[in-house]
Length: 247
Image (cartoon, rainbow, N blue to C red; front, top):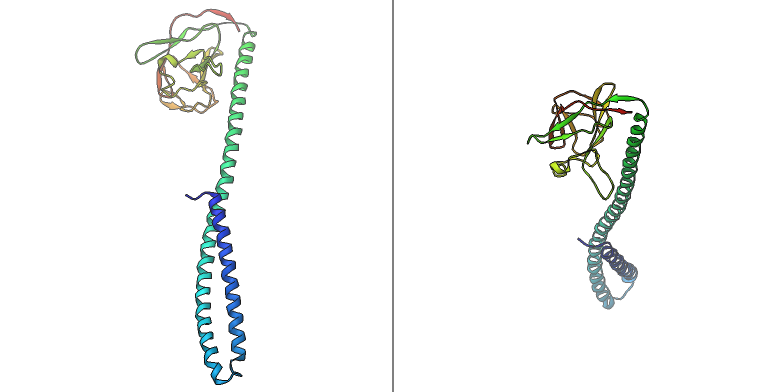
C-alpha cells in the first residue's frame, strides 16, 4: 500500500498535470475562437488553410478535454485515498491514547483494590475475636489448597513478582496462569458465620457450581460447592477446626 508521502507526491503531480492541460485547453479555445471570427472575412486562398488549422485545433481540444477528465478522475481517487489514510492515522492515534489511558486506569484500579483489601483486613482485625473454620480448595487431582485461618478474607489469583501481587491462595503451582487465572481473580470471605466469593473482574470469570458470577458481587459459598477460576476447578470443602483470631 502506498505511503502518505507517496500519495501526497502523486496528488501534487496530478495538480501539475491538470494545470498544464487546462492551460493548453485555454490556449486552444482562444485559437479556435479567434480564427472562427476571422474565417468568413478571409480570401478563399487563406480560408482553406485556416479551416484546416481549426479542424486540427478542435481535434486537439477534444483530446485535451478527454485527458483532463481522466486526470481529474485520477486526482479524485488519490484525494479520497489520502483523506481516508489521514482519517485512519488519526483514529490510530486516538486508539493509542485510549490504550495508554486504559493501562493507567487499570493500574490505579488494581492499586485501589489492593489498598481496599488491606484496609478491610485492618478493620476486620479490630472488630473482635472470631473462629475461622478451616476450609480448603480440593483440586481434581486430589491436591488440596488450604485457606489461611488467621484472617477472614483471602485473595485468590496468581503471583506476579514484578507488580508485587502475592495472593493468599496462589494457584500458580496448579496451572493457574495457563488455566486463565488472573493475578487478582477473586475474593473469598468469611463474614457473619458464612462464606462468600466475589469475582474481581477477572479475564476468564469465576463460576460456582458451573454458574458464572457477576464481577464485584458477593455470592454465598456453601460447603462442597464446586468453584472454578477460569479453567481451574476445585471443591470448596471443610478441612478441620480453625483457630480464634482478633478481627
